[in-house]
Image (tube, rainbow, N blue to C red; front, side, top):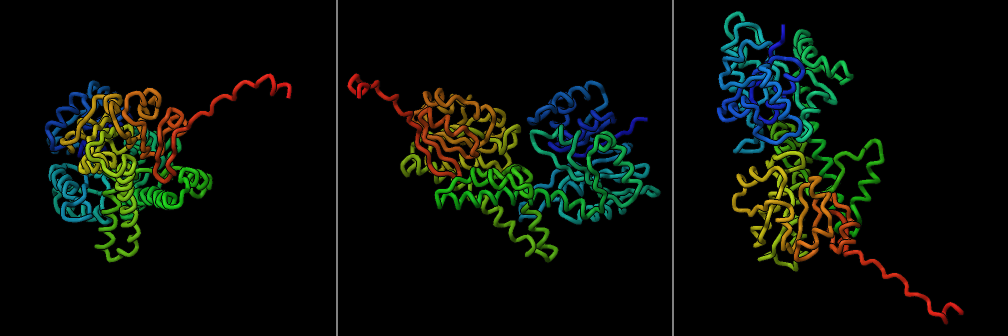
Length: 459
C-alpha cells in the first residue's frame, strides 16, 4: 500500500516538500488556509520562483498523486503529517511567532481517527516540540496516540529540490523507535545513497537548525568585519578571504565579503535564538549574535555611503542603476533583501533609482511600490551616473562591460557582492569599488612603443 503523506503549510518549504515527497513515490496531500495559493498549486502553478520545482509540481498534480486542499480534515487519514508552516519574527519583539504551528496541530489532531506521527520541519524556538506534544495529548480523540517528532529542513533557496531529494544530512528528533523507523522509510532513498543520519531528541533537533543558521550568519559577518578593517587600512578582503579559505578548518563557503545576508531565515533565526536564550536565562551565551546582526546591517549603510561618495557627496538628482532586488540569486524572495534596502535608502537621499531583477520584480514592487523599476538590465543602466551590483545573478556577471559602458552616463560601478571580473570592467573604462577593497581606477592600456628611428638603430 502506498504511504500517504500530508504537508501542512504550502509556502516555500511546504510546496517544495510536498512535490519532492511525490517525486519519491508517496501520495501527498498539501493543506493551507490560503484558497488562492491552493488554487494555484492545484493547477500546477507555483506562486514563487524556484528552479526545478515547477516541473515536479506539474508532473505530480497531473498524475494525481499530489493534491492540495484548504480542509485539514481531509489530511487526517495520512500516514505521516509534516508541519511546514511559517514562524515569522514576532511583531512585539525578536522571538519567533509559533502561532501557526500551534494552530496546525490544534486543527489536525481532533480529526485523527488512528495513531499518528506529526513531524515538524519548521524552524522553531527550542522547546516548541514538547509544547506541541502537550497540545496534541490534550486534543487527541479517545484511544488515539499522537507522537511529535522533529526533522528540521536545511533548504537553500534556489537549490531546494536538490536539498530535499539529496540532503547533505538528515536529523531525526524522535521519542520512539517506531517514529525513527517511519522516518527512515520516508527517506529511504536518500539514506540508501549515503546521506548521514543523526538520530537525537526533540530539543537537540530543534537546536540544530537555528545553530546552523547562527553559525553561517556569524561566518558571513566575520569576513564583513574584516572588510571594515580592510576599508580602514587599504587592504583587500578578497585576498584575505581567499587565503583564509584554504585552511581546511575554515573553508571558503560563506566567507565572501559583501553586502551581507538577508532572506526569511538567517536574520529571523538569529534574532529568535537570542530571544529564546533570554527567556531561558542564558542570554549572555548568545550576545555575540547581536553584533553579528549589527555588522550585517552596517554593510547596507556602507554601500549607501560609498554611493554618495562616488557621485561627489550628494545623491540628489543622481541616476542610480540597482542590479538586483532578490536577497540572493536563483530566487524571487525579497524578504529582508539587502539590495532593496539599499535601493530604498538611496531614494531617500534623493537619488533617481531604477531597479532591475530577473525574477523578483513583482515581489519588489509589492514591498517598495515607490521605487522605479526597469524592464531590463539595459533599461536600468541607461543614463546612469552610478551602477550598483547588489544581487549576483549570472545575467549581471555576464554583462559586457564595454557595451554596458555605452549605456551609462558615467562608468562607475560599486560591486556589492565582489562578484564582477574587476580587471575586465576596469579595462572597459570603469572605476570600480568593492566592499572591503581599495578604490580602483580604470586600467589605461599603455601605448605601443614608437618605432625606432634609423639613428637609434645604428646606435
